[in-house]
Structure formats: C-alpha cells, structure tokens
Length: 201
Image (tube, rainbow, N blue to C red; front, side):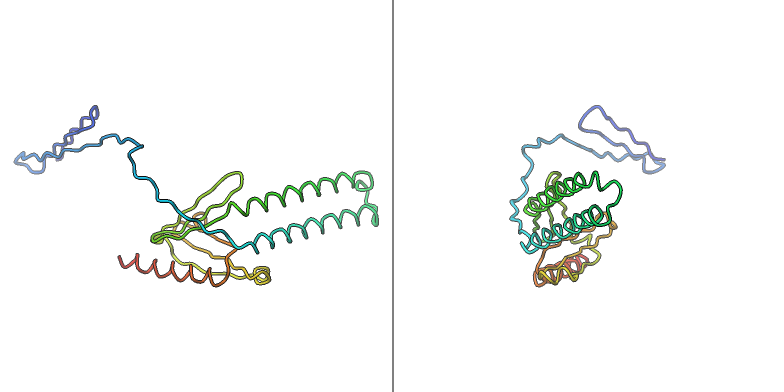
C-alpha cells in the first residue's frame, strides 16, 4: 500500500511513501518554482535561405496561362456560341476573372518572398504564408524518410521539390518546392545521414 500526501498550496510538496509492511517511509521533496520568461534563453538567430526565383517565374506563368484560358473560354461562349446568360452578363464575368487574376498574381508574387528555409544540426525549418505566417520545424529524429521529386513543369525551370516524411503522418510532413536539383539532393543526403546518426544515438 502506498500513501501519497501532497501539499498543493505551496511551491514545494513533500511526498511520503509507505514502501514496506514495516512502515518505513521515504521522503521526497518536489519543487516547481515559477520562472520569469525574460530570463529564458533566447532562440539563436537563424539565417534563412530563399527559394529559387525560377519558382516565382513558373508560378506567374502558369497563373497567367490559367486565367488566359478561362477568359478565352468565356469570350468563345459569349461571342461565338452566344450562350444564354453570357450574352448579357459576359462582360461582368470577364471583369471578375481579370480581378481574380490580378489578386492571384499579387498574392503569388509577394507570397514568394515570404518563403524561406534553414537547416540546422538537429532540424530543418520552413517559413511560408503571406497573411498567415507559418514556421514549421521538423526534428531529424522524427523523420522516416525523404525524397526529391522533379515533375515535368519543374524540369522546364530546373527546379525540384524536397519532401520530408515524418512519423506524425501527412499533416506533419514537410514539402519545400523551388529548390535546384543539386541543392535538394544535398539536403536530402544530409537529412538521411543525420537521421541515421540520431537513431544510433
């Protein structure tokens, strides 16, 4: 039988445990003092690396193509097919598409400069987000595997994507696009090597 007597009213509690039938008690002192947040150590300054500008060029080109095709379809339906509804309201649809194009291109442009990454001894960090900033740090001891993918669009702009998969599932995985293939492969090799070292430790 064990008896725990805790005094929750103070920052120091005394725990008495009955360890044996002969009623020998062991006393353990427990303390949990409050800390001043101003005395906590500061996070070291991190120098982040930007993504390749070819990614910005690729995203702007594909955004332009997407909306150009959409506008062309609306014009075709309005003036060639003369689809009911577009004859009278087609100009408003075109104005809406052009407004969306300007908004999308603006977000793409300025959002690109908010993306950056850094690799440290124990983790890799990726920042993203124009209006809602997000900073994701993946410790190497949580990494299951990583890979480099190069799609047909990436190949046109000499780009690749680094994918880091963790034990936490897809919600905690990390994808960094806009890297040159040699840079992505160096990062992958480093992470794989560090993952193996951390597992041995």
